[in-house]
Amino acid sequence: MLHIFVDADACPVKQEVYRVASRYRLDVTLVANSWMRVPDEQWIALEVVEDGFDAADDWIVEHLQTHDIVVTADILLASRCLKEGARVIGTTGKPFTENNIGEAVATRNLLSELRNAGEITGGPPPLKKRDRSRFLQQLDEVIQTIRRNHLFNST
Figure 1 (cartoon, rainbow, N blue to C red):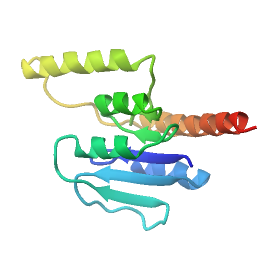
Figure 2: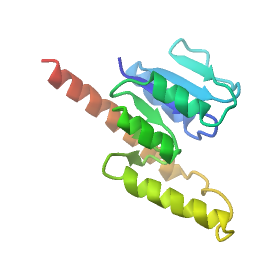
Figure 3: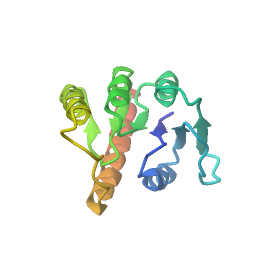
Figure 4: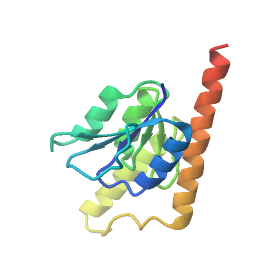
């Protein structure tokens, strides 16, 4: 059964995930390093992992199945999830795919080097309304595509 995993510690689109998952009656698991408030719904679970390096990422990769959906801004986690057959959507609505993940990893590494050298300071820009809208549209499209493919492949 299709499941949505959310890399939840700094995820700005949790409410959007809940909205779409509710409409499609999908289970959602938020994975975080610390407790957070989540809606009291049977289909929403919070998994609090140890505060180790990549503990949340490791938990997600170990529990996802082919065609599950992962919501994350973490490019390295996205790469790992794609290798396991999951669909991955960034928090701005940009899908991570086999076709674009290599470029995304290279850009991440370059920006990391520039930050370490002091050339770049600050983090990503705040999420805009159009980012939220793009995220909602992309999540909806991915769910519909997976469902269509599953129905087509099961007949």
